[in-house]
Image 1 (tube, protein in one colour):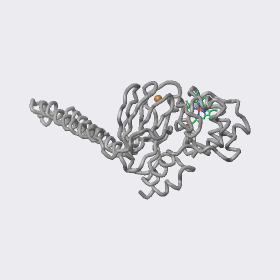
Image 2: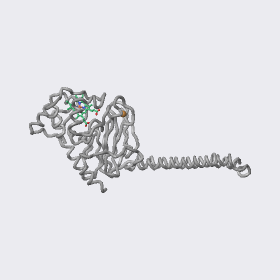
Image 3: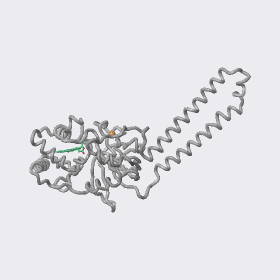
Image 4: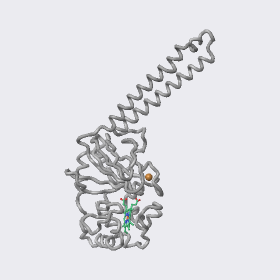
Amino acid sequence: MSCGPLLATALPETASARTQSALDARGTDAQAILELTWVLIIGAGVIMLLVVALIGYALLAAPERRRWLGRASAIVAGGIVFPVITLSALLVYGLMVSGQLIAAHKDALRIEVIGEQWWWRVRYFDEQGVAAFETANELRIPVGRPVELALRSRDVIHSFWVPQLAGKMDMIPGRVNRLRIQANDAGIYRGQCAEYCGGPHALMAFHVVAEPAENYVIWERRQREPAPVPTDPWLRSGHDLFMHSGCIACHAIRGTQALASNGPDLTHVGSRLWLAAGNFPNHPGTLAGWIADSQRLKPGNHMPAFPVFMGVELRALTAYLESLR
Ligand SMILES: [Cu+2]
């Protein structure tokens, strides 16, 4: 609500994610799960206190006062009737909550997220359901609107988890799992791969950026555009380096001859808030560092280091990529 305009002006320079915590629920589903959690914790706590109090009573009360505890009726009530009623009520409540979590939404926005070692490919669709553009490690969504994610994997099992917005969902090769998320507050929510997937799994994070619908529309329109070939000579030299240095074996920049899809689509890489799956804020320093030595920044990842780039060349290449907004 009120933080909408604030967020719009604060992005991207001072973008910082909220604390990644399931106890700070900001989405419909996460709230339902948190409610269920509190009911279970408080309920179990109260029952435990009751049991401890009864044990104390059984041990310490005068024999003639505690005698009723040994009667068959007390045992049937406390040992059978009470657990059956409590557990049945919990079962019904749990089924109601999970039914609410999987209910489909007609006007949901559809986004596909594909887990890859060790980053996230994010695919958006046009009105006809045809893939419109791809980005990486960042899901932009409109605040308050349900979003249906189709979760897939290209290699091993990953798990998609944004604790503040929804529960965890595995991404399994050969399968499509669906997860609904909805952010009720504008903000940046950090997520993390929650299933060990080898090597730098711990460095496989991402962010969900929830913004007011009007900002989302502007962002979406811009992402659909291909990248212009720069006219500025400095950026042009960076463009040429990119096209002739092996980068196009793995990356695509729509509108250029770079069409590969082994690594993240870089058409609008300059507009992303982080690099390398949520690990480094995106600015010329980190971007140059990534190109020159990605293996030091994220050991084991699938992009080779390019120590051949130094000085002017590295700066031109970086400036070109940063200009892709
Ligand atoms: Cu993982």
